Length: 127
Image (tube, rainbow, N blue to C red; front, side, top):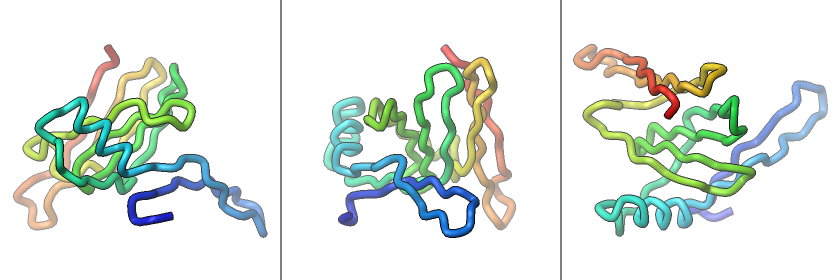
């Protein structure tokens, strides 16, 4: 693909198994979605570089986190549903996430290596 395409692959732990693409990320569609939902983001060319992936236990939607540009994208059956910018003041470097069985989300953010900002874990209850 081009520089505006990303993919997430599944890899079976079997000798000789080849990776299989399970999600295609279209960066241009992502930016269009972001600009429509958040007009202040219009004209920015942000990239979703996956740092974590979690599957919602109730909906099956895929949540893809990107530390680069601090984004959270939601995909349903391979289609981009929404993109959320994460505020830099709160999420220094979002690197991990997981869901509780009821759909509540935990999101982790790394701290700075020099120690000025510590790592954090955020609890986001399902609405």
